[in-house]
Length: 130
Image 1 (cartoon, rainbow, N blue to C red):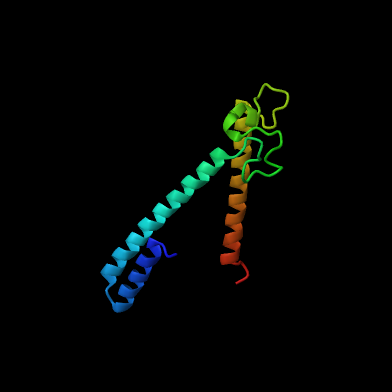
Image 2 (image 1 turned 90 degrees about the vertical axis):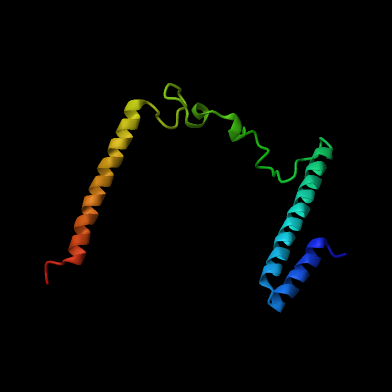
């Protein structure tokens, strides 16, 4: 059974090979519309199948790792992800002095590395021995 998109695609190929590019392009646009309609119908069928499955069945695409006791990221706030500065289990210290210290270290390392690479580049481009 040939779909409407297949017949339109065959017509578009014929028109393209005959040299009628504009008509072929119109047929190709109609093929894309038909494909979009078919994909929408397929998506609706998948949604219906997901809604009608038995509740005891495992959801499609979920493996064993996804079903472990982790909460989804949408239900978490920033404190639960990073940890707060006052909690005992904070992985990253989010206090203002700690942030300032990390930024200062980053700037010092970046500046030092930049200066070192600058002089290394000068030495490579303009060697003293020549």
